[in-house]
Length: 537
Ligand code: SF4
Image 1 (cartoon, helix red, strand yellow):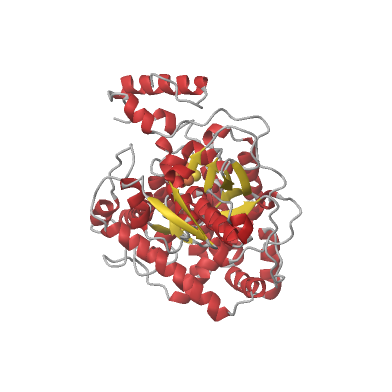
Image 2 (image 1 turned 90 degrees about the vertical axis):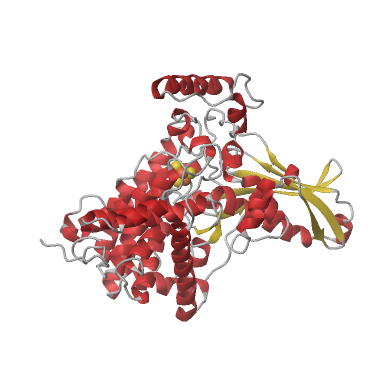
């Protein structure tokens, strides 16, 4: 079939495409294994192994997995009998600084929450306060330095929120780490600094791999403290957490099968079901929901543009990774082969969003920051970066995409620390496939099939960020997630929908099972896979 695209219309039309010393707290066996592998890789590649100084700058590898140290069944995020999906768009699509929703946005929201609680303590209790300490455990400790977790946590403590924090402020904590900041609680003013954000044990039987404690100190005594969990996608919980009271959904569903049943019975699209539920659960009007979706879409577009326009450079951290979104974009847009041009442009858009994340600039969790290049790339490609679909189609697409993210969160996980990268890029890709399918008005079965295909082909994908930085493999992985979303879409719209053998719910269950059985070395600890195979020259 002849391709109908033009130079200004890069996407194929609707029916086609679119150390010497072992660091304290580090397990000696894991450390020796990593050192041996790095040495062997250096011989093969001809690159010198990292110097002891370079290695000392890396986040320490996490200790080996502790049997049974999974995720506590008490956490709301894993409770079994939890009824229908109740997540709202504002909870799901969050704007905040990169590079990791669970390691930056979550911790910042946690310390901001703790700060707010502290301001409400009785004056006589606050009068005894002498300091504030935040302890980071598990994966937050293992790879937090590479993610800037301590800087995010400090920002929250001093009253900054993820959606409005200036990336320059976080950058200034890198260049001037000894800065101190006043924190006022009632009549009391404390001084805090990065030294109060403590990388504690990466090893232990924690309720969640991303566990934190926040403590208000009176000399050596804890006057008030709370244990928190950054459970993925920027969502947070705490000890004794109870979800906020919400309205009942108009079309209750906890599986895609149930969602589709509502859609079939009511002759509605997936987007219409999600919108009706959003109005019922959040209490907002449709106009207010649309205004929020437009805000998120604008943020996504701006993130892609910022990444494309950023001057070429080297990303922060020991990898010294060169950016490439701008270069890929410049060359791809002049590619004479339409299909290759379309793939190149989608890849460039995803690289742009993900490089913005790696810079620590603002991104949208969709579903996480590590995967935040995927959905913006697709939104841009069907919008002003390509097909110029009407805004309502993009709104519909983002609503359908949210339903995929909701179901994955509800029945599996969105956390790389809990489920590996299948839970981040895999879910983002599935959301993207649903987004495109809905934006082009395909039926609920096609939306579900496209999402299933994209998720299925990410099953088992591990999380192994080199040196704990959300760069390798994360940035290119966003491009692959976006391309696979298109592949899922193209297959779904060209197959006979009823013939798809695997249902979306089955694949989500498979992801949950794989997450449960995946070795902890591959869950954002930087202790396995690419993280121990790449030699930093
Ligand atoms: S490998 Fe995947 S899950 Fe892990 S930090 Fe990178 S994007 Fe996130």
